[in-house]
Length: 110
Length: 272
Image 1 (cartoon, each protein chain N blue to C red):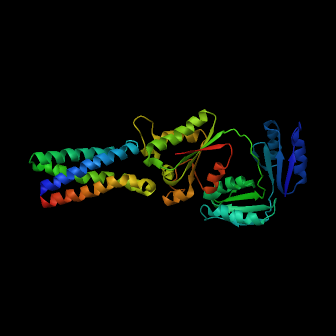
Image 2: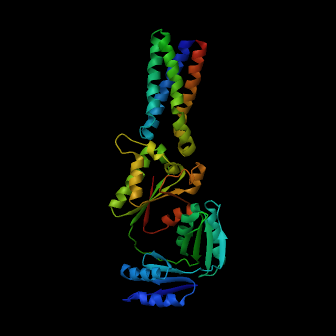
C-alpha cells in the first residue's frame, strides 16, 4: 500500500516540478527554496521506493509536507494581489494540495 | 473675481502687475507672459506684497485674498469614478466662467485636476487643508473643437496590467520608461488590474532576476528621474492597497487620469 502511495506521490511531484518550472520562469526565478524542497522530495521519494530504509522514507515524507508549506507565503500574496493571473498557478496549487494529503496518508498508514 | 492680463512684449511687466494688484482687494490675477525673463520679476513683486504665486508654463497666477466660488461640493470619501461624475454633473449645470469649489481627498486629487483639465475646465488653485483633504478651485470652461492636425508624439503612456507575477513585464515597464527618457520621450506609468500589485510597499523588493538588478532599484531610478507612476484606485482597492501600504512615490489615480492621457494626441500608449 505504501509503495502505491509513494508512486502516486512521485507522479504528483514530477507533475509539480513541470508546472512549477513554468511559474518559476514567469515570476522571474522566485520561490527558490520551494523548488529546492520539491526536487529533494522527488529524489528522496524515488530512493525510498528503491531501497527499503525507514530513515529515507521519513525524510521523503517530511520533504513532501514541507514542499506545500514553503509556497504558502508567496502564493497567498499572489492570490491576494494578482488574482487575474491565478489560473496560471492553479495546476501547481492542485498538485501541492494532493501532495500534502498523500504524505500525511502515507505516514499514517505506515 | 478673476482678472486676466497679458504682459507679453513688456520690458518691465512688474510695474503693470503691481499697479493692478494695488487696485485688487480679492480674487485671482492671471498673467500671460513671454517666459522666464518676465515671470521672475512678477514673482518677486508678488512675493514682496505677500501674495501666493503659482506658475504654470508661461502663465502666472497671483492669489489676492479669498476667491468666492459660485458653488461648492464635497467629494471626500467617494471612490473612482464617483468624484469626477459628481463634479461633472454640477459643472454641467453651471455657466462658462463660473467658479466651483471642490473639497476632495488625496485619492481623488489627480483624477479631478487631470480629468477636469482634459474636459476643458481650468484649475485655478489647489490648496491642502489642515485635515489632509484638498480644496480645488475650478473655472468652468468649454471643450475646444480641434480639427485634424499633425502632432509629434513626445510622450508614452506605459500601462502594466500583470504585476510582479509576470517578472518580465514588470521589468519591461520600468526599463521602457528609462529608455523613453533617453529618447527624449516623456514617460508616464499607469498600473492597473494585477499591475497594481507593483505599488504595494516592498513588493518590488522581492523581484530579482539573476541577470537584472532588483526591480525596486529600477523603480527608484525611474522615480528619481521624475517619472509619474499612477495606480488605478479601483484595482488598488480590490487588492487591499491604500495610502498606508502604498510604495513611496506612487500616486493613486483613476479612470479620468487614465482617459485623459489616452485622449492626448501627443501620447502613445504601450500596453504590458
